[in-house]
Length: 465
Ligand code: BES
Ligand code: MN
Ligand code: MN
Picture (cartoon, rainbow, N blue to C red):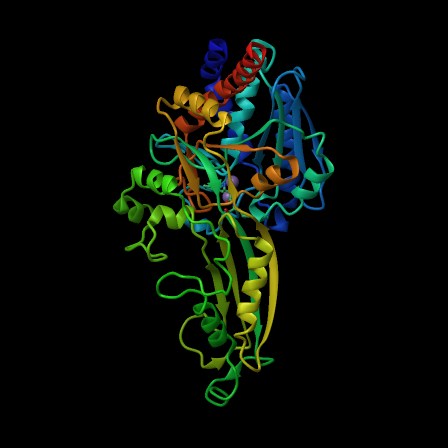
């Protein structure tokens, strides 16, 4: 084991160099202009897996390809299904980046590039730890299947089909994903719950063209006024979402979780400076952590319509559009919430306006027993690598594959995030701390051994009993 750790340390520079190559590929899944880069990125992942000592294939899907690597050492050993995503968010707005998003550089001990933390840098830690094991020990202490997809940032629409038709090939004992965050600087975390999501687009059309607002204003429906009113009705001033049935089935936080959330260090000032906001807002009666991790939300992600150029323009616009997402918690069904949202909006469309409602991705919330033995093994590996025991947290973000692993493959997933929420994921100047990359790689190397030990301990107990 020590030889693996030493090997990692001796090869830190070449690992970073290889990561830089990965980060320079413009794998933006949302924008079809980047299609050739997606293919190139899948090929890079395949080759990196092969260099690490895995067999690897690229599997086409109706969208962007999936890459599957694997190495089966011994059927008696536990099998780990690692997951990551090679696609990244669009880099816009480009002018807010200090250095170009696809020209990775290190400044202040951080790697700056789109995808540095979400998720290329994080998934790469597992490839490097696997490579170190194979190059020093000639084997892995566990069997590994490594699934890397290219559509996470657009909702993983084609992944469930792939999982369903490859249940046997993907069979495993536990999933491992590094695509979340540490709790804070120097506080590593294991995430045992994520929120789910639904996403929709609302398009309103009123008059067939923009009209003079003096001649026609006040006598026909204005789609921008209508959309503002419809969106404004979604949440009241107490932060309660007004969609009928929205909270049906939402599980209340247990006493235990409430007190565990309350025990975590939390500074409102730091939170405000992290977000650049002047005040917190949310559902009355809940703390900020409760609102972020355990309560459902409804957010307008974007809204446009009418004239938005310089100076005034007196029109009744013809069209308006909004993008809406809701974050979901355990007990909420994505399909049902999407229907309820549509009905809520449809009921508020004034005469003379047509609504078109587009449904995008969705996934339910995810939760795992924080007392599971997998968690204990992961906790030990993280403590050894980061020098601090991890805290157990939930997160507000979503990773569609985790509930699919549970529902389709029947396995639980360890969410071990090496990144930080302050890494500017999805924002300009995304970065990943070099020390988090190295510590994460070490934690990953230790994890494979700890998971193997767990199996040995379990079989020793069976032999005794
Ligand atoms: N890695 C994130 C999710 C995340 C980030 C979870 C930080 C916890 C902490 C992932 O890549 C992501 O952005 N997911 C999307 C999912 C959506 C597109 C279906 C999200 O949460 O918005
Ligand atoms: Mn991610
Ligand atoms: Mn993301």
